[in-house]
Amino acid sequence: MFAEQMFADQTFTDQKLPDQRFIDATLITPDGVCLVSRIWTPQGSGPWPTLLMRQPYGRAIASTVTLPHPLWWTDQGFAVVVQDVRGQGSSEGTFQGFGQEAVDTAATLNWLRELPECNGRIGMYGLSYQGLTQLLAPADCQAPDCLAPAMCGLDERQHWSCEGGAHWWHLGLGWGLQLAALQAKRRNDSVGWNEIHSALVDGRYLHEGVELLEQHDPQGMALRWLRQPADQDESWILHRPAQTWLQKPMLLIGGWWDPHLRGLLDLLQTARSSGGNPELHIGPATHLQWWPETTQLLLDFFNQHLKHPPTPSQDKTAAIRLWDLGDRTWSGQSGNECSKACWHLHSNGLACLDPTDGQLLDTTLPGSGTCVIVHDPWRPAPAVGGHLSPTAGPCDRRIVDQRSDVAVFSSAPLKTGLQLCGRPVLKLKVSADQPAFDLCAALSKLPAGGDEVQQLSTGVLRVRQATHSESDSDIPFSTITLELQPLLVSFQPGDRLRLSLAGASWPAIAINPGDGKQRFGPPNSDCRVITLCLQLDEATLQMAPLLVPQAG
Image 1 (cartoon, rainbow, N blue to C red):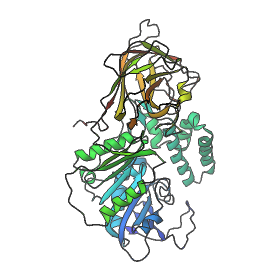
Image 2 (cartoon, one colour):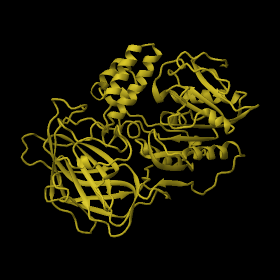
Image 3 (cartoon, rainbow, N blue to C red):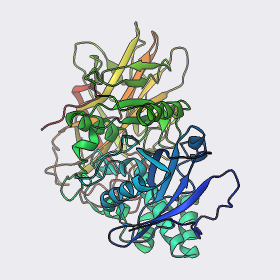
Image 4 (spheres, rainbow, N blue to C red):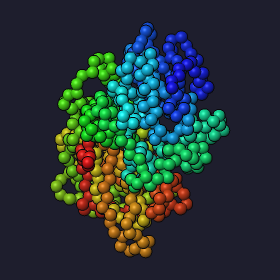
């Protein structure tokens, strides 16, 4: 069943240097497919505790975009195995995404435990796709000793492709086309690869991405996601790891500007409900730009659980460490805490034109007034920074807030310090003159004594009104709830808080044509101007806990 050999990799042409200390090995799965892995080993004689990563991007890369090269891990006393998943890199078979990984993870672990390089102690690591492959296995498969799934989730709709009932546009197309380009490379289709790469480099993918996926990867997971309704659970896959796996020691690493942050938080709760006790660190990171100390976190974790005798599980809750975006220090939290502050919105009708008109009121008195936002698809409000845009991360959004299609509501200078922790939740009544609309929100900090607008968190909600006719003269208001990206941020006296609202967030999400149909994409001649009317009398902005109680 197993075969091991020096493997001539035709896809990734690495020149073997004397100090690289690796071999390429093959595993034959029960259904006859050859999976190829690269094995790096420390100097000297083994066996060693072993780190396993299963990924679709090429074993030679080994996720070094965020993680240390395997040679660094070998210097720390670990063997490292990085495998091309089925249908990617040099592995045989047809790539079908997450659904294929459970049985292949089981076969790989069985194979790995028989290798002379492995002493039987195994840890799995990696982010994103490589994070979820750590969690997918048959229920009867023996779990590794520990897992470190970073920046991933279990729900293909809410954690991998959609938010607020809208598809991730830039991210969904970009990732899908990356996988399509890898498939073109496997077929030796240089024309297709170049076409995809050029579209990604010059931005055409935002307009032509769906057609490129249909041409080059019509059966791919990314295209399937884009074709499924983003506002319905039906037909979407929710992965359910075995309880025995969730009970293993687990290190979770997330970022405030990572699109999978909600997925990681839900994974923490799922593991806890199964009897696990994961450790969680959320830092100043985007999906591909981490903070330097993550390497030490991983090293300490694997040293503890792979180099020392296993210790009985303890009742003590594992650490939750959160990076404070305000004072830029680490803070310990339970995850169930949240800030009690509540703001109301007020405007005299000029919140889109006069930055002093829209107000966030932190009093017990309700807000008042109305605000009209006109979304013009010819020049949609842009997405900047945050967790979904092409420029993910912290940013100064003052130029965006100066647009006449963005309503801003700012607080008075704070008299005392304030810390916000949790998930910002906006509730208000909205009406639109079209059957469907988007409401896109950003929460920012305005430091005292300056004009910078430090964006902290963003969110989106796509709404299809229950009843609407273009002849309606009295359009009913819909009460909506919009949840923004979780955060932890401290404010100093004199700082101000700002909420910004718009009818688009392009290209983080596709343009809503306004007709109420499941038809979204780049701006085009069929997209309608949408007028939003915000009723502020009962509008509130408050914080929900970082960890949301799970039903069942």
